[in-house]
Image (tube, rainbow, N blue to C red; front, side, top):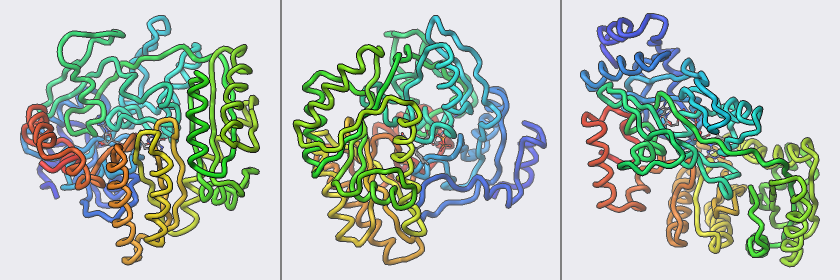
Length: 462
Ligand SMILES: Cc1cc2nc3c(=O)[nH]c(=O)nc-3n(C[C@H](O)[C@H](O)[C@H](O)COP(=O)(O)OP(=O)(O)OC[C@H]3O[C@@H](n4cnc5c(N)ncnc54)[C@H](O)[C@@H]3O)c2cc1C
């Protein structure tokens, strides 16, 4: 716990109203969306920064007194990336939520870190432009958190992830220095791309106070095909068939049998519960191209044994299908007191082994699992329902997670595609990256943050 004198100092650095220090207030910022047992502390104090200068002032003070600083957007990350491993100051960005500049001709937008992704998407779309990264919870998550996690989502297959849309960043370094990283132009070949190093660094290298984002023209139209398969293998073959047809879908998502029947149990949507899995394939482009694309997708799917192949053009009907897919996490949560989601990725050729392996592992450990994922990318999200208070179940969960990660690595993949490492996967990250790479990362960290105050205890041990 910070001494009262330090909290008083922070009130002088900012204002009284910007500083929360009562226990009941600090509790509200002690958790994020990671559902796991962990040893963390309450933040000592939560500060609501309103300007870049506020951030600089807090950082200068924290660095001088070696106090941990943990940035916080909407707190929706699923790996314990904004919880306090050692207490410290939580920087809350909800008041730095302005869109500073929108330049449709240059196709760029300059934003503060607390802006909600949906606001960026909506403004871009009002001018016929598109910001593609779309974590399923884009209506609540912030751009600062998305940059720090390099969030992906369903459209990553065609459009990439957050890292592909960051042109430049203004960051406050651990000692309070303000820097602009990147020129903001579409291409930039001058020196190291330090802005890209900050993307995905989970708030451990620098604090983002402004971001210049790249936008692209919004595809004129889109449509969705849903199809069912008797096995994961044939579904993957169907996807390979689509690519052989030279179609580049925006999204190739999937739900396994358990995910389908769990959604139908709690949020009935007319999905077919008899089949082994379902693919949701969205195509986009000129309106006149949709018919051709859908025909070729349908041909590839049918040639690989798909049934119930349905094309959906109507916006509301498409939204209903996506709502069913997005409901799988909430539906799985209704099977037991708790739900834990995970995130692994393998080359697409190993996807069926990964999905079947996850099921076998969970069956062995007597855990209920619903599997969804972004098949185009080879990204699998096992969603496990259990009682975290039950010691036996918890032990099995931890063993199952470890086996799932080992399987992903043995198949040429890795332990996170888009959710990050946080505190949750720290011991596994060591194994994936190896001692030499971790040591190199430690050196980079010490250049950016010599006193180790930025989000300590995340990604790797110092
Ligand atoms: C239901 C659900 C569905 C999801 N679906 C997806 C999905 O499809 N794809 C996907 O990729 N993710 C998904 N996620 C994960 C999550 O949405 C993302 O990681 C999210 O973008 C984080 O944004 P946030 O504002 O909540 O950040 P937070 O959780 O608040 O913070 C995340 C990280 O960013 C750091 N941070 C925050 N602001 C700053 C800043 N200004 N400067 C430096 N560091 C900062 C924090 O310290 C922390 O390390 C999902 C989560 C949930 C709960």
